[in-house]
Image 1: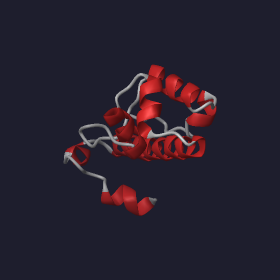
Image 2: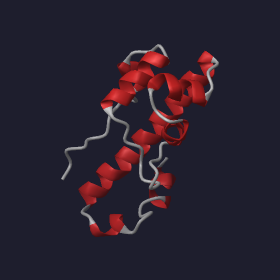
Image 3: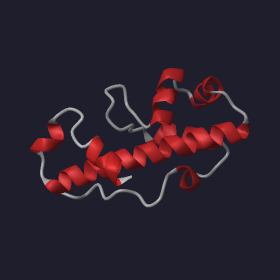
Image 4: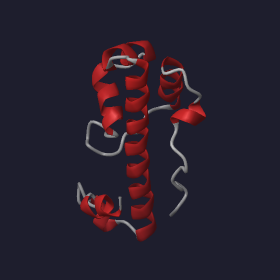
Length: 111
């Protein structure tokens, strides 16, 4: 995925103004959010559920769920679901939170 990081390194122009470590953390989160989206999509399809069914059972809108599957927030920045939403999705998809969340996680403490 290195070519994707270079391709999307400055979607809003803000990445050019931050330090290298901040850019690395942002790129790490972007990759993480995309992988989370792929996982919830795969699990949903394996369970034979619609996006609407998963969203309803998890207590979120279908639009929000669709964004999570795409790994994007409304502003096209990486998705950032709450812990409550992640727990609800893991319950609806009948997996543990550990199985839902991609590994390894990005280092968000990089400054």
